[in-house]
Length: 331
Image (cartoon, rainbow, N blue to C red; front, side):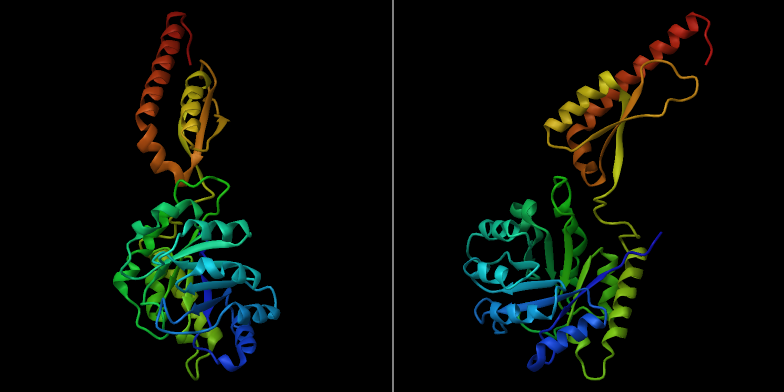
């Protein structure tokens, strides 16, 4: 199995801010997959960083992906400015005290990826109302507001179950990514990868004096990939968005009833002609395929109907086989 490549989003909060463009390009040349821009307002978190004007000017370095992480109290008020600044994805906190859905919709309508972040103490259940609007779930493994904090293993336990928020999504929606932000380094990369995190936000560990940024990124990615293959994920995507699985193989007449019921229930399906076994008789059978990410929901909602359909199909096969025996036919 090919190794999955973990992405690194480099936080510039602790770099040399006197030459932000140079430091950002340095990160990309060292192997960063995107730039993580921590925006703080001194209210939502007890620190102040920079805003959309700085990001817009930094955008001149090129078209490399920019991830904005807004740790601000009123993201909706400033969202147009961050979109105009050229952010490719914008994540804000589910804990803000303002309507969340309109802001997520605005980000998506602008063609950008929309995300929600959770403080370490916030449960994943807080994201449930917005799951269909999310491209990113950001699991915070430190308290937001300052770089250089220690990684919180208890908070990291949310990484793997966070993928469940991306299950049962309509085919036109993005696959979704889980980002991990806070204290990510060589020491924590393997755990994050083992829990299936797609993007690791790495900051202070890269900007320490004497650190070879390129080597550090390679090591972090390698450790995360190793964790992905050997940890709880076992080298398999937590939500296999591109994979389709067989839900049932049935004659067309029986399968169509099940297919119609499941499609009416919102489950995407494909019907393909199944290979006919040598010597088999009776009506042609068809495979009903569903996205692997929908399998759990499909079984919960239509498992009984599937069993009834399979039983009816088996009875039909038995009747055909009995008729052939009476006629003296052999397989």
